[in-house]
Length: 233
Image (tube, rainbow, N blue to C red; front, side):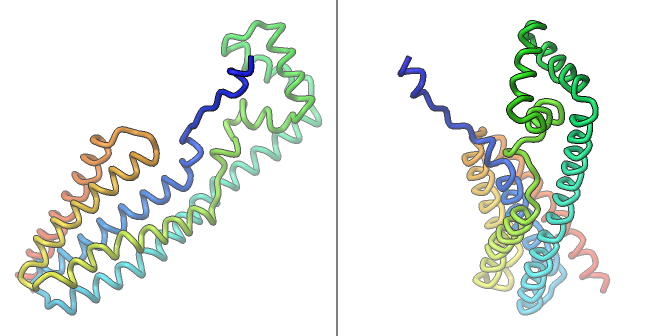
């Protein structure tokens, strides 16, 4: 018995909130800043203009990511709070119906009807709202919305991601900015995909291919646009 009592498992789903924001921020930082600088470099701009654009992109992007994450995740949090408030009222006014509803959920998962009612009764006796939040609404402490955490994580990782191609552009010769920044950014994206997959316990190859493909596409389109408009202007 003690062998099973000491059995421990390590699951990575608890990281999903901050990991999503971190990967999104870093990926966006690399792709958007590199694409911006590659596009401006393709338009035959001087190095100061390229660097200024990169710095402006870093600052604007970090603030945009923070604000966007905070607003979107706050909307999710508001929805969760509204659902929990509604569920709390129903538990006070329709306790028996809520009891049966919870039992029906367990029964649909394969629990025998009598046992399902017993489980529902015991869980509701301990914490009815938590039981319904988890099993009826799909809300738990792991997946709960955390706006401030998402905002800070996205802004910080965007800044770090954007700094990488910016530093590369600063070190590269002017006539080599486009290929050097593009190549270095693809390497950064590949590393990001590998690290993100590793942190989430997922396969690395698929993640690396996914981020590098979309990053390369974004830079290619932006370089093409910059080249066309640079020639016209």
